[in-house]
Figure (cartoon, rainbow over the protein chains, first blue to last red):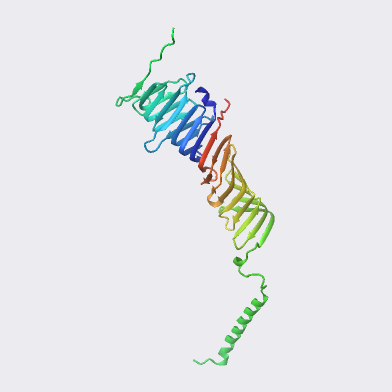
Length: 153
Length: 191
């Protein structure tokens, strides 16, 4: 949700290491980040902050677990749910990048691939089968987009 | 070889002299005062309104400890401090710590602070960072610190809580463990 970007960020974890020089906070152990309707979970979360105060978070999970993400969509009230081995969230652009075994559901829509970019502003996503936005032709992506029932005449 | 009286005389004289000085030493000692400092339980020095500065190997002041009162215990090789204030410097970074009480070891290797321990750390062009807990152990020479009590760190509106803390570098690398909760406000710089 658009209002999320102006909400404070709360993070809970077992441990945090602060590197003052690099301005990096490394959270470890059952990490939960919340910012308004946005929630990111993982085993580790690295948070950096740019000069204007926007935060960036990179969440990963150990073992066979996946980092998870959810955020309310503007207007619709639906939640977008995502999971992947690595989730990168940019507080400035409201972009969320999901890498490796990426899977996003929004209402009944569902997409899977090696990389998913979700735009928190527009609610749109890009799915590719490579590790970045450019497709490289080897794997496949899978998308199930439910027809939106038109409003009754 | 037979020893004649001439030979014996110096030996006898020296023996008498040594015995005499031992006797004199024992007689002149105050029996109430134990000669070995380690055996002394009580303080040997009390200083009111104290300020002690320690210099590093290059001769630069490393830290200063002020205290309302310092009591030195030789047997423990440590000083007990009332209301200590530690001023720690490194280049142009400053760290100021206060507490209800403290214990400083004679070798300067360790300072234990307890009761309302507060710290404020200033780095050039950086907002002040603060620390609050009930205890803090400081190893000034290696710039390390540790607290086994709940800790609250703040800086520029951000606040981080934890059940314990270790600092590997008093001016940079800090780890909080146990029940970590961080609140990072959005601090947008006005365009």
